[in-house]
Length: 140
Image (cartoon, rainbow, N blue to C red; front, side, top):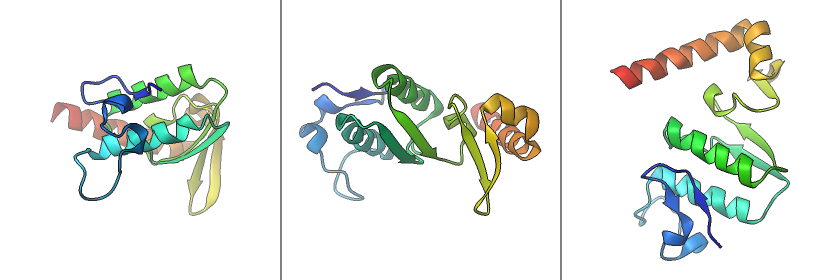
């Protein structure tokens, strides 16, 4: 089985790991980066060919380019999958069919990215804040 998640030079090809999907992913004792660990765990979940996959900040340790490559790979190779993502990064879910903005346990707004940009000042504020921070980090 060949599973590769992401297309950056740092992307991990599961088959290139000595133990493949059985590679030990732990806090200590491995030579995998945080992003590689996340990709191994995602590959394990996708190997089960799920209909629904719940992801909790699954791209927190990868750069934006790798994140987009991973999501594109999942969309192309698992077209029937339903992804439910818990994240603080709007960029991670901009292309999702439905986004829920939660604050203090309450649904504040729901819709597509475009709908939320037009109807939710809170969503726009978070989006603008994250974009300005991202822009600053790129050019700093």
